[in-house]
Amino acid sequence: MPFKLLWESRTEAGKRKYSSDWSSGARAYLRGNYAGHAYFESLETGDRKLAQINFTKRAAEIVTETEARKRNKGRCNFAYAVTLYFGTSKPEERDPTGRISKIFDKWGTKFLDEISQVDLNNLAVELHPNAGPKTLNREVFTPFIAVYNAAVDDNRAPQKRWKRPDGCYKKAKTVAPGDADINKLIAAASDIDGRNELKALRNRAAILTITLTGERTTAATVKLRWCDIDFTENTIYFPETKNGKERLVLMPPLLARTLATYKEAANPKPDDIVFGWKTRFGISQMIQHARKKAGLTHYRPHDIGRHGFARRMLRKGGLKRPQLKRAGNWESDAAVERYEHFELDEIDFAVRDIDTSELEVVEPRNKRRNRENGAS
Image (tube, rainbow, N blue to C red):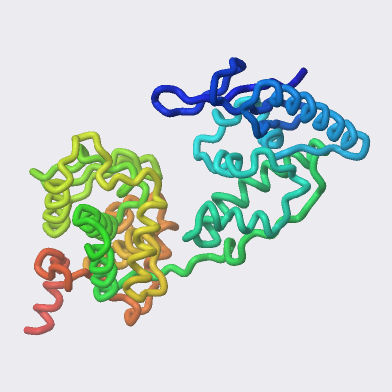
């Protein structure tokens, strides 16, 4: 018999456990696999005799229904499709991001041919209610379609064309914020109305970190640890960046003071992650909320960080391509070219309104000499 009669009970810690031994107050369940389908169903009783009757009846129904389906066409539920996709009976070992696991928790016993486009759309919104089309596509649609197509290849699901969220392939417009917008973002993210003061300090420090160091979001907010920040030398060490190179950045006084204040309030351990986010979704969501609260219509973390830093260095610092490449830790000249052609009326990137004296960039010597000679 491919099925087992199990009894649900609870441990002393209050956790559920299932075993073949009956105990007073336990509930009966049917569990097992048959023809590629996983089953785990409540038998709706705690009576031993009635549970055995319901178990035998339900097991026979499953076998009868499955054999009837075999005569017509192949069929499987999402749980079995996941096994087909990963090629192992322990798919959780192959899903480190947990994206497929989240769908599995909702639809593990749901048959694929019963899932409609509307069901998939509703599931995406349920799992990520505040996410945009790109996030929904990455977190739900892409993993689901990959698993579904594995079942199609095994002739266990009908061929179907799934529609992805509108705008998921639309290229985001890159706009670097100016002084006023940076101030609005920080003010909205630091507003302690509705959040505790520690989170307000964290949000302010995170925005200033990416906009004043120019480091990529993941390295600056997800991988950065307190032991990488040296308040004595006012430096931040990024041991792992996107291009594989390490990077040492001098902190402007404003950033150093903000991080020091946040550290004093957080009282962390040296190996703790500075901002506490496990993925870059954390800062993306924070900036999205701050942007909406501030009445702004754009700006991603990458706009605020890399693009804002690069354009500021081009205009305020007067850096040329080789200098900018080294300052921002870009790997190639082609990566720097995209920052070299902006209209002046679109550029206002110094955050001097936040702290004018601390962010002032010294004018290059050759420009200062030419200007003084011209004036004389």
